[in-house]
Image (cartoon, rainbow, N blue to C red; front, side, top):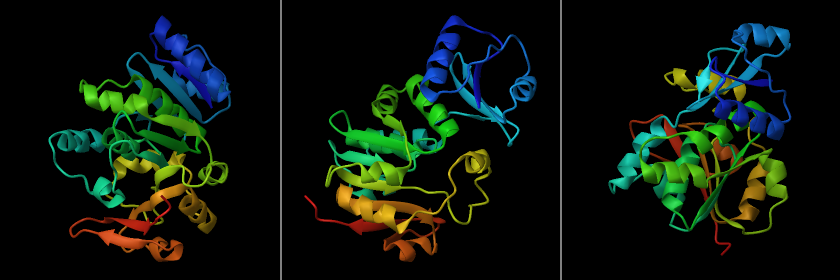
Length: 260
């Protein structure tokens, strides 16, 4: 993987690209009005993170480019700020001030909603094991501007870490989080979600290990929550009680704890 800027090599974009390249340990390559395909070929890689003046994009030979965008989390956030309920938050029992660990951050949509609900006194830690997605998410959460103050503040409060969730959980003390959350790549994709196809290509597609759930139950005080496709066998395999609603293909599994 390499990091570059858009065609317009603005000083701020170059500075951000250099900083991210240093953090990720990957080469920064000057754009010099060179096409991305030529850069990919020249540096013998299949992925490039492109730092834009107002965002970040990932492109490559693997499929369609993907730009960081909060997607449906922005719609959910506006509803939440109007006083409406969010089913994920209801299932998870999130309260202001909560400490939440999102073990499979992806593009951060659920982390954003958790952060908004936990508020300024709470904390969301988002883990992402895929280096390209980590870079996309880290820079996106730092720079994205929605125009909605509360939403943008929720983005900035999220701590993003490049880590395998099982390794990270093993290194955490007992009962240090209120809720531990998993949203792994579904064993069977929801085909209508074509916008997530690039994400599926980049993300870690391995199923959750029982050991990860055991560690999550040690780390969490109140609950471990997993999102999966409705009727997925993962719920029973991993010991979750299923909570589902009619007219949706998505369900949540909950392991309620009393580790306070």
